[in-house]
Length: 247
Image (cartoon, rainbow, N blue to C red; front, side, top):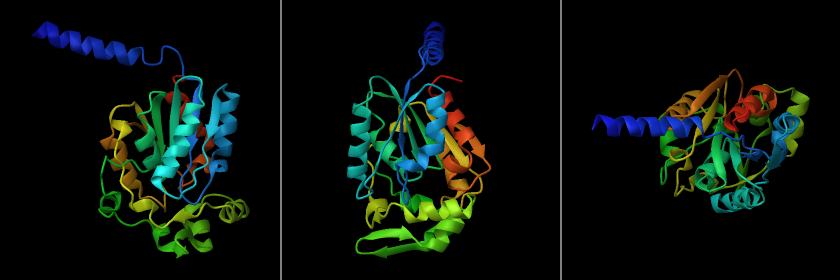
């Protein structure tokens, strides 16, 4: 019996130590709500400088199925294993799409990470509401953040002039987007990393810590608002490089 236990533990350790025998060369980035693929611009430049092949998905934000389809199309174009990275709402997308055989690891940046079939809204309600939620304005079946909420709560640690440019380009979301439930939780079977934004006014930092702990992710904390991928791109890029086996 002891020999069997030793063999199992040794096998697991060996698997972990050899998981990145060859570093992953591809990264696929998935943006969140109220944003588009260019929100990763600062991180992209750093990853490309490190020699990685980077693809930034353009989510339509019309439904979970549509966003997952866009992510799967991007994964299909990769010439080998990829690290799949998400910000905010994108965490729901990669939790659903991340079981793709090309996905070697998952990285969550202030991101949702639901269980399969979980009512994420009910889970989030167990934590104090983040201020940005009060700024959602709905019209014609879609929603966006008010300018005040976007500048203060969503992009509050960016230069105001830059934040206003992002506000003008924000991705409007379907009213039903956040109510959709996933059918898979890829973080249960893929190595996962998580970057908590400690000053976040869009997703409660304690909720982020809960999600990171639940998925047993390798976790860092960034002294940042919600858009750490723009305000702290060095830290986020390093986390992705770590997930790719390059650090």
